[in-house]
Length: 418
Image (cartoon, rainbow, N blue to C red):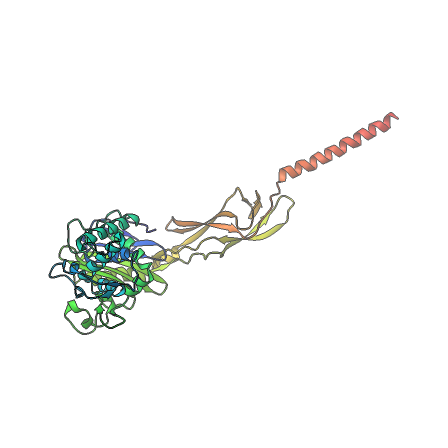
């Protein structure tokens, strides 16, 4: 999964300042379309909470109750908060919302302590110790996900020199996060209200809000120029050291993508997000490749020297999705390559060289652009053919004829002796 590219690479031209880490990933083709500094260690700020929620979902039941304690105070005075009160009961469902939408650092701590106690089986475990146990779970999860550039020292993302990730690792976290239907649905909400009406949270993701009044930290009003009807999540983050961070998912027509920008600023963060989004949605399209099971060619096949000629379909085995700039699509060509050890072409007729069963792979179809093979996939025969080798057949006929002549000669000689 996730084909990686290095700084400033990819099939797209995106004008983002070089001090950012950025990438855009196309879900259907499973490819990173543009990548900039994607393996450089960056401070993730509150995008950390994607990992916090992901770890929590391994242990919690959404309807279980949590009573936050003094851990809600283990944060700086200027932290983003969900305004949880120590000693007040809250469901895990609402606690996840409090962590992910308003980006409450108090909620992240409460969630982490709750999970730490569950994981150790000690519901009375000291809050600080429970936090430490949760961090072990975070880093074990990172190892399991194959994250090579990440280290987590808190569940919320407040700055620490040893708390870091990469855009590439964050993409892996996000894709795993979005596999969970509840989490994916939760971060798509601009506004959340708990079932009992006790809690109400607004998402910090500017892309999701039509009105500026709903984005508390902008202190503004009116129509939101950065609203996008195509964005479906995921998480924002900010510290003075991390800068403005954004992970977003979006869907339009037949395309789905995930975009990441780390180390930006408030004036440019969403503009840069739009650049990544539009580079895929507006400037590219999928190559019109063959569908799975679609005929790619019909050929004439002959089984042996005396066999009759019949038609057979060559069928594509696997559908491939591959994005190119729209202006390049007309230059794509396809090339069919038949395995000569199975079917040998002579003057436009294919002669069977070995036994072929229906569904046997007999070659490939290559997709070519600008003289380069972009990818190739197997093709198979729509029906089977039996091998009838010419030489053994001729030798058999000759042997039979020779034996007949020999017998005839013996008979003649015996008659002459009489």
